[in-house]
Amino acid sequence: MNSARLAKLARVIRSTRLTRALLYYRVAAGTEHQSVLTRDLTTVIDIGANRGQFALAVRTWAPGARIISFEPLPGPSSVFRKIFANDDHVLLYQTAIGPQLGPRKIHISRRDDSSSLLPISSVQKAAFPGTAEVATINVPVGPLSEFVRVDEIKQHAMLKLDVQGFEYEALLGCQSLLSRFQWVYCECSFIELYSGQKLAADVISLLGNQGFSLDDILNPVYSKAGRCIQADLLFTRSLPRATGNDSPYAMATEVADKCPSPRQLNTPIDRS
Image 1: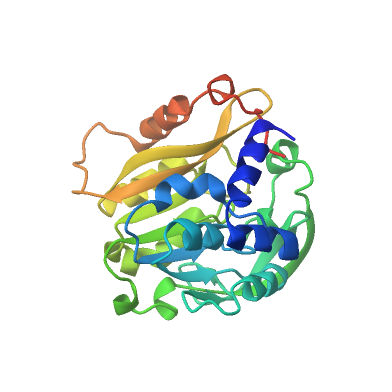
Image 2: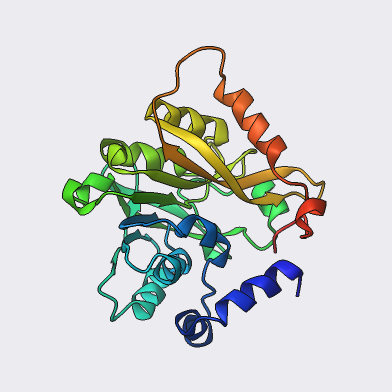
């Protein structure tokens, strides 16, 4: 077991809630997100909830926050509901978020947390072995406003997205409510892992136009060649950026370059 996994396990076993989720449901909380959850969060919209890894982290390190989660796959949704069965702070919708209301095909990965509304590319399969497509099903998709009212998003709210290449489209599905959020926490890719996906530059540009600035780069993931291929980006609401020579594509390149090297992190360069 590598040092990153040992550190994660150490954080899990300090919490009765997290230990129970691991032992009873084989769900390891997203302890790597702890640093973004130390704020006075009141509402967390959790898009791409899977089995509740991020929601478990929120309940542990931002216990006062109400969590509204979205997960379209039946299997992970079932596990999520069992973990949070008696928790009034957590609500799950079994749907995906996107700009248009209606059913859409989802590509199910052998590792279901790598499933996507976009086709899984050969690059993804090479970078993350064991993530090949095994099935497709239709799942409901709709804008965030179809499920969440404006008054449900309280001050100091965070929008979290982990949707395997569908981040840009999911953000378009949240656009009418983006002004309600103080933070957006979004997994972004610097190379195309899912066919047709928008990259980090597109997400940076979209959120910049909505009044968010890039605040932090966390949890970088590397190819075996040592190239940063994706990371979690934290955006904070600020004054809209002035237009000019600031290209989001140049900024995305700068973000990738700023990712600490695997040697600095003292962690493996590929994620198992």
